[in-house]
Image (cartoon, rainbow, N blue to C red; front, top):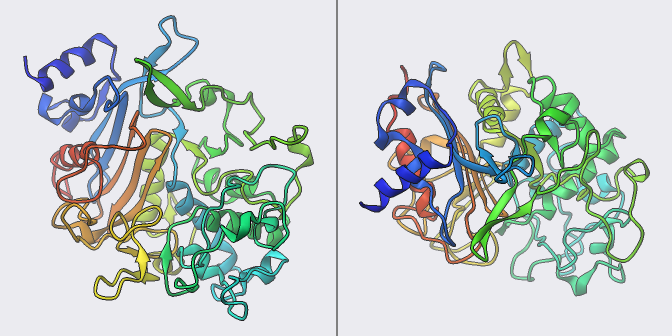
Length: 446
């Protein structure tokens, strides 16, 4: 029995999620079940939805298991409507809400971000150069994630950027002087925490509630940042982020979900717990994890993908203007291999996932092989969207601007280091296999 046959046999024994859609059920070689395995290189669950340019479902399948304490053996089938922490796809969704302020004339992309935040935000090596809103949204701000990440409740994020602040960390929140704001790309979550904080400062509304009111609820999504606004029924189906540890799948995130209607708030280690009612607006953008903490399902991601594919309008409701969405998809930074101008991995490095970036949006250029962004093969430049990678979850939400297809996916159980690399890009082997399986399901237009 070969490895693939063995995995398919095992998948039947653990009660895998039902396949949905004609393409998924057509043949075993079009199932995601072959991705599943136990062990340190394993995958405990996976799912994906692909739609054609006409909106027809070409592939929809959830396989594997999710941790569920209420079930006798501790596991339940993973299904397309089970919520999980989507990681950095959260940034693109947060920006969709934030840029409504641009449409209302309440912010401008070239505004001094510090002036909007209410404190001086400058790179120490460039004290006279403002860090702008555009810089934050495109990861060209010169900022980095410091050792105090995440700054907890009850603490001000400004203390990370002011000498003498308790989270200044010796200036570790700033990149080296060779990487000036506006001219060097370096992926850093803190950029989007400052965007969420700015949103609160400008609107006087809490970030999570604003996102529910302006984006999630109008789309009919039972979803929210750090579980804020997510129903009790959906919380009960949470799929924790898992890793293989000591011979078993172990919770990393969401093993315990806060009871409805409470949210998960990063608490200080050096003081009493901060109640949600005591959170101060506009002081700490980490609190609801705009950089990665959106909880939603693959079915929810599919609906968001349809929103982007239709230019910001869905079911007769305009969420974001077409022109604003075009701004998000316009490159704010493009890697220049002849004169390197950015860290193209998530952190320091000279190669990796990022070859071009808009405003909270990845714009694959189709460069390869293993250090490139040919995620989807030859037509990679036709796709745009965002990847996610945290705590064992690998996720993606993309749409094809040429033929209208949309693709969302998620894989759980991936180790943090030592992953098996892909063949044609900087994605992992399992992501490339998933993408190939799903895209083989059918043509763009039904």
